[in-house]
Image (cartoon, rainbow, N blue to C red):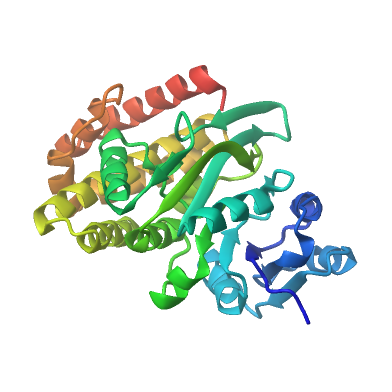
Length: 358
């Protein structure tokens, strides 16, 4: 009789031959091999990815192949549909996890019957040359239902929710929560699809555990486009940000906040997400991760779309800056002052680079 599957590790990928061996090696170093499954979704790769997977010796791996490239959201949904585990763990193919990460997260999850368990990430640039530890909290924490609401509200106003409870990768999510609430990624989104799903998950969480320990290694390569800069360069519409805003609004309504407060919080997250994307695009231009002239042209197009959108203008007018945030950026959006906005985004990038190097 086969042992029950405790964790389903879901890995979508497309043309990932250069990353696969290291990603799979980190899974091979896990204890618990007979208790977790690896579900890999090939999103119509044209390189040697499938050959590398076929040559690996992981008996708990299942591979699903799409005939056409549909994007990471659709690929992750295929993984969810085939998952047999009590918990789901999303892993990007160019990232890795620490030794015995899965067992440690699972032991915590089962001990406290948590809906979600997360640890910390480490950013690693260009394969170990530079490292930055992202600690979400100062010590281990348990969040009950009311504390979850308080925490994500606080993080929105502090503009730091991306390194807290909100996220997709590197955490255990109870599969029954996904099944019972029929949660899926939005197939039509190729940018910000992880944010919409994350807010949907947090809508239904009643109990969360945070462990102050690095479990997830996120690799940043200077010669590889970031998701945000590539999204901007490909002309993703403002509508994607509005979709995220709706999911944030729905989340707070489900957590029993008033319509007025839910709208205020979702607008805060809305403008912060747009500002973050502008800064990320500026960073890619400065580091020449995208063609400088083409990147500036696409940024100008994005700014033009931002200035022409009434919803953004209204939300920016009521945006509350956190301590230490560049207050000129939302003001430049409000005033429709393009030169000031570009200058302040570039200045913010230089501040970040001077602080952490990338």
